[in-house]
Image (cartoon, rainbow, N blue to C red; front, side, top):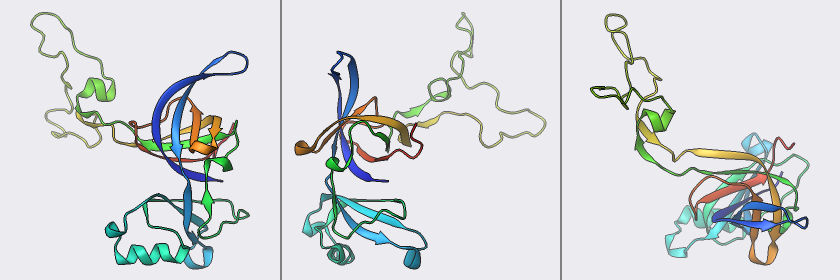
Length: 209
């Protein structure tokens, strides 16, 4: 398994050699550096930590400077971890770029969905509205949530108004249509979660079709 971090640039469309229009998301990905390698002996599992986007020295504290000095890379703003196969070898300071991903491969993309703020039941949980006739007092209200006498309370887990969006979402098995290595760009078929400029974690698909 390979993984890389990037930011969503936006959506556009390209055309295949057969003239088929393909909607794609443009992702500015990497390069990332390996900042830590976790082993079974020391951490109980095999994992690789990668760093993305340089961080100013004045914003780096002493423990962080020591952490990055061990791997011989500059301080990074964003750190993430993935678990490769045990037969995949990585080295401290190793650079992973979009060139390491093959066109046509399948990817899993994880990001933070767009925040919608506080929303009602209809938008948040897709409930039906009440009658829109004259005199109706139940047009977009939640409705009854509990019995009156027993249990005389509302159970936890009922669908109710509240915060919508800003959740961690993973879209699986997206096709990597094109790689532009000299500009660190990946063109992925379809949509990915989040706003423009949002942070994304891209890895080879776990459940590839």
